[in-house]
Image (cartoon, rainbow, N blue to C red; front, side, top):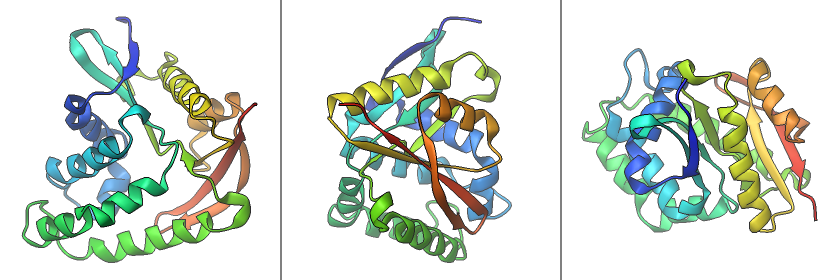
Length: 211
């Protein structure tokens, strides 16, 4: 297999990262959206906001020919994302594009989105789980798995968190995602409870940063 380089993401990588999310988490996307996938702009709009708020927290794995085969979003201050989504008008823009058909979605998914975000917010407000730094999303293309790419992306994220002097990092993972669990455990994440969404249970994992 060609060599893979882990580097900080650029704005021009957003479309590829969004497409990779849809590729890797198609089952979840269909759960939200129904039998058909949304138009690419829907996911790209969300990824563009995440990148804009904290571009230093975005990393990609790049193969020959500038092919993005993996990514990681690791914000050190997740609340900034929600604040920007509201105060920057993104929520209203997304809603407008949604109801006017730009995303190719009906209105039914709104209920699912609201339920899931409310559930995660409730778990985040518990004192022992209030963590600003997150592994928000990480994915590796299926044909490139098993080559240590996820570990390389995690290393970039951990170095970033160390530079930001964060104390604790949180992530959520499905309990049956054993390959991901093995990666996170190797990096010192330990189980810290569960939360749920409309698809089922998520395992909450935390890591205490050194120094």
